[in-house]
Image 1 (cartoon, rainbow, N blue to C red):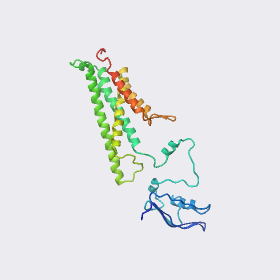
Image 2: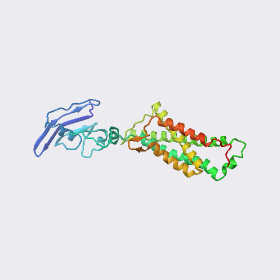
Image 3: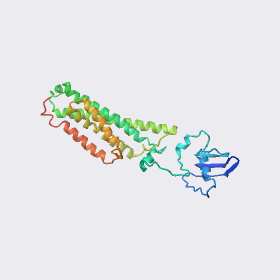
Image 4: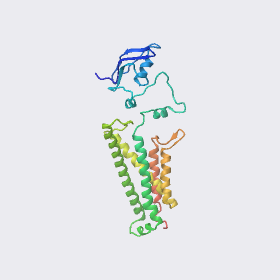
Length: 283
């Protein structure tokens, strides 16, 4: 039978004094194991040998089927321990303490953050290039001479940029997640695999988050058109990243479930304002 934890004839001596002798533990996967004994019985000594803080004088420790050696480091990424004293960081909340714990780093959060940042800025740059710059260099004057409503021209450009970047963002995320999942099959990851590509909810969340991120670029577009500056649109996209991801003390919008819905509605509101009365505006 395989065991998650196993000690074989574990013995520890210090200065000729025998602290524990011939300890044999066998802990199965999923089992809650009570390790009891009076003060001085050697519980802490055994725990320190299991966690490699102390080396056994005799015997061996096996964790996850691997015999513990002096350079066994990777195995400890899969376990945690509190020996003797329970301590907390007084300046951290319970949630922050868990987030700071080794092995609690999940991979999906940085993927969503960095792909979202990249595509929000990229979409804003494209909108600024196609629309704001077109106004500044008079290219839009030529386009508005076509026998098509100005609003339809602007909407088609905005929609083309939105569709392109939405599809590119979804595809990029899928490729990254697939590469990480494939790599985890052959190597032990140093982070938690907190996504399931076999779940429908995974794809729903991926699509919804991508929808919100790309739509936010309409806010940057409105600012750029209002100020007649492509740089203003790009700077606004950076400010939107800080607004949605940064912390102000204990306050953050990153984990607010209702914020993406509000932000999407606001984004499309700004998109409508960008083309409002465009037929009557002087160029």
